[in-house]
Length: 440
Image 1 (cartoon, rainbow, N blue to C red):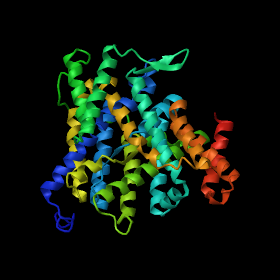
Image 2: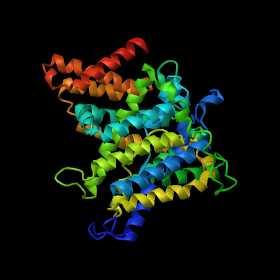
Image 3: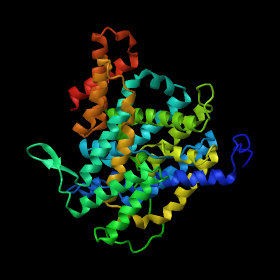
Image 4: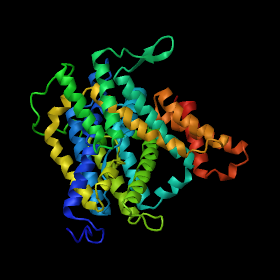
């Protein structure tokens, strides 16, 4: 093992890698409880039971997808990069596709599986990087920031920090309400932990919020902590049995969105983590093909288990900061996700007040890319702005992307920079325009 993961070459040890893997796990363990809450639409009342996925099954699927992806990344690509169902992609799945478009969650899972298969083909064929390069950098940054705003809005809505208003559409909620006040408390605690650079700050913030909630009677105390692993039967294999439902124009846009967001989410994370770990060589990522293959395979496997797109996590930088340099770090993270399967009773204490701070803070982290957009170039600033602002305003990641991608060729053409626009962008312009004309 020491030889396979090149401990000596990377100047690391078994102890250091194990500690780094545990640090990464703590930093991203929140997804075990946030993902079931989001995908099951647990905080949305008045929906038929058929629209609510089984939270226990999602918990198991989340842990298995994270374990599979992280271990595969560690063994195949030998990178200290962990994977799990992505934030933003799960929100798009639940709130835009299932709730907004009325697509059954079974069909949505089939769409995730289809995007995973396409992902694998594009990776093996070497096309993935070419497509990534076709998208202008400003739009890449805008998509990430827009998803951050979208996630933050969802968190504030679920905690009723922001509520509906007949006169102003949205307004500040009743902060004296118990559950809302608990969410605000959790947000403050989480922010303080992150300001102090505490590893696993988001996860620890959720724990503190849940404990305070139980002490104040706002959250019911669980009857146990450890229990048998929840059955995955309600979601396992559903993506295959409903695969035939994805062959229509409506689902094509959904699949393209899954692909697009995962494209840049993974690529940006790979580069960021590898750079921090000192693994980049001549500004290139060694074994990039294997890393992308591990990621795309994990996306398809996660859909089979029953969760939204699995992708690389920027929280892996916490493990790198703790000394992780080899793929063994990711293997350890994956093993901890398997251990976590036995702690499903804790799902009962993870209410919207507990998950809201995590959603809001993740949004803060994601909008950091706004600083990289050239706002003084109006022809690129306009599509970037519409991309990020329309996501929360229309409650749809796909709509934000579509509107931004429609504006980009228009502004560039009238600026006299039409030749700089890649043919792929013109193709997407037509696809999204047809989407609004015939489907919206």
